[in-house]
Length: 211
Length: 211
DNA sequence: GTCTATATCTCGATAGAC
DNA sequence: GTCTATCGAGATATAGAC
Image 1 (spheres, rainbow over the protein chains, first blue to last red):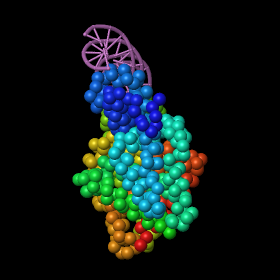
Image 2 (tube, each protein chain N blue to C red; image 1 turned 180 degrees about the horizontal axis):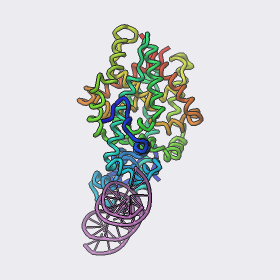
Image 3 (cartoon, chains in turn green, blue, yellow, purple; image 1 turned 90 degrees about the vertical axis):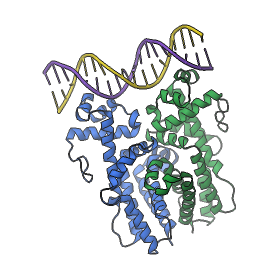
Image 4 (cartoon, protein in one colour; image 1 turned 180 degrees about the vertical axis):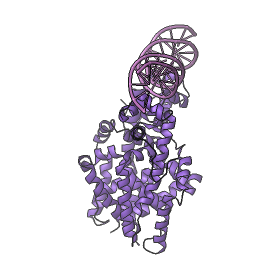
């Protein structure tokens, strides 16, 4: 049983190759739209090998999805750092969380795919991924609630606020092809666009919460 | 050729039945994951009829997608109303746009699906849908830019601001299954949750833009 | 226009040689 | 562990009766 904090540590090189390829294809095409042949091609491996290492498509998908949920949940906690002011905490979180998504856009796409498809696997895996220790998203909610009580920010609903922060950090990745069509500069240099966007997001949300 | 402002007006009842069913299934399962049998079942017709009215799966998908893009683009303009203050304009837009998405979540899912899959159809249809008259999203950008210059709001990048507004209005629908798991109240009464959320979004963004 | 039956093909999965 | 060949289910698409 793989450890949540060190995902895929018990995987061989070949298994990891398959895993990474499967994540990419499932993320683009969805659970049912993905083709085993496409995964094999992306992993630069024979199609029969997929079934040797992972029994079947369903098993492969659930394995990939389970790891992805864990990583996604953990990223909340990892992006939150102790900081003297709420301003600094917010800035660091936005930076850390956006960087996490940028470093693994496929993981984000897979999460969204599952949501679009109805999220039947979400309940089980989300509960499992959050019950170890405090739930990471809850930490963020608590942070906002504390800042609100301390008078550092306006009195706001912390749950809705966290959802808004996550929305703005994630959505431009979700709709990246559309953004690249509509935003002249995003198409040219995505990395630079992301940097500008982080600044904008902090600015908008910080002012939105200021007393 | 169907008119953008009155989509599907040239469709027979049967065609519309198929169209609506196809939208639902494509939105959930994706372009390739969708099954023609599932669409036929949802439309409560025979599978052979799908091929009688729409030649094949690819044609059906592109037809549905083209209409969806048009509707989505048009919704920007429809949600924008002349209002004496920017505050009122923003409130009306958030309300209108969220209501549009709520009224047709499948359309939103289809757009996101296409983005996740790489958006190969987006360029063509997006250009086509925006070139008739001014591009609707541009109107919103101009509105923000004007308010910014008039001193009604802070000096902000209008493109990034519009993207942020859209992000917050859309994302909680995209991730609805996750939201329903994490938000206690969303699971119980989604409609009430959406109402509360509209208030929160206006509040957050309005303060975020206030001088 | 509608339905049944069926042709054709794609895909997931396995068998078996090496 | 790896590969080729292939089976069989299930999917798209069509033929043809009504």
